[in-house]
Image 1 (cartoon, helix red, strand yellow):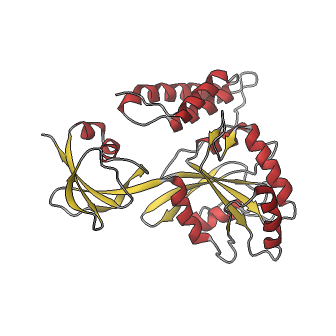
Image 2 (image 1 turned 90 degrees about the vertical axis):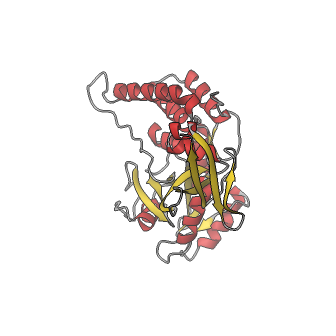
Length: 322
């Protein structure tokens, strides 16, 4: 099976070739692993990348000169998708993540309360989405923080509408992201990340005035206003988080049995029947004869091809060659 490597993977691979330090190489390898297509044709490549990641992490675990441990954080992905929440100091990241996940992070009215990444699971309908509460993004931020932003499935930028200096901190963060080649629109040589923008502390009396000023810098971009104090925007954020991940939920059923509606298969938008089969097991996909599909009133158990494109909430019944 051909590898069919994506442009994003090839960009990450090129950055790896140019990387000088172990930290830079680790960041690039993590990005390569995150962007490589997951199928049989890339299994050996995935194993090689994982092996190199493990080796570099071992090298970084101790400082060669002093024997002291080096802080380097990464967060294992769980749930239907991973979203890294970032922003300026004291912009409300921890309060938001706590409101959405129940994660017990320290929340205080002063900056730099969060010093390492903390992950919590946000429920949305019948799935869980992983949110990462990250330390503030500043010129002194460590390399691993940008690594987390690069490798997350999507990112959420918090804009503090309770802060008079929101214009300055937003411009500073834009410059930091550009310096680390993280972008939200196609640009050569950058990592393109799906993005949500949130205007936090929307209940502040001057929030609308600050938002007007902010739009002069950022243009007419979509900014969801949220407040953990009033609950404004919290449920809408859940819906947008699911949408920005660009995923679908597919439910499976055995012949003659009701569908399993408890644990959907999570796939990227545009996935096909054979993609769903491979997600379950590579041998399952190899032996797939055909499938039957249920989708509202459009499909009611009709036989479909392996290349049939799937949609969110489809129910699929696999038939395997004996």
